Length: 298
Picture 1: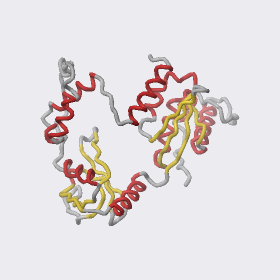
Picture 2 (picture 1 turned 135 degrees about the vertical axis):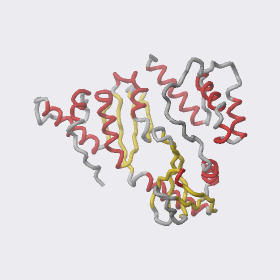
Picture 3 (picture 1 turned 120 degrees about the horizontal axis):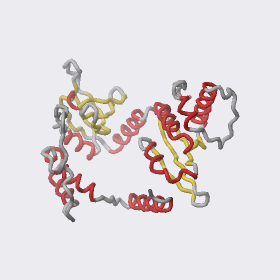
Picture 4 (picture 1 turned 90 degrees about the vertical axis):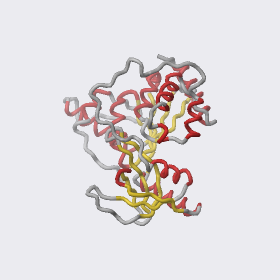
């Protein structure tokens, strides 16, 4: 395990490389990249110029074949991982333009063509299907559509002003409205577990700062109202390793969970808390079953 000094240096180095647009690849990552490029679907998914650039990253030194000794047994039925609509939708995203899209329902009924703005493409590893997240400018609503249900997609030109207007509306709708902020502080004695802690919050928008004087990491989270329960689940999972220093809603919910856990074990129903209270892992875990699913206040 790395020492805290090595972790700090690695984080600072990675942050500076990210600011300059440089991305480092390990030998294992290059080996996986080469294996991916050798797959028959690579020619359908990527443009020839992109494949050439990626191949240049894998020719510097000899790398082991990661598929040696690997054998797949009882695999599920192969499904199409590259959809014909991926390339035209990516071009629309790259050109920052709108689209005219026609979809069909699960029963095969065709809907009328709708104008909109593509936002992002997403692949579900569970269902093994591609999804398009887009904004319907006619109904002003966010849409999530399987690519297999899309009949056609045509690019429609948009002025920069109109594109920015639709993009701002789509971003607000897709994020579920209002965004909430919270600050989570890593307990100093658990700085060595920073990688695990950051992995727990990897699915949220966040910013990390390190106080060199106090030797404390602070994680600034940004999340939507629909994600509040998931944030609480991650906080309970980390237990005494972190504490919420800013974010009254999260503090209140954690205190309610702890009171229910203490009452369950017969310790007491009215414990006192201070802003620096650390909630033990076993107590918080016991409260997961009884914690209510209260919604975040508007």
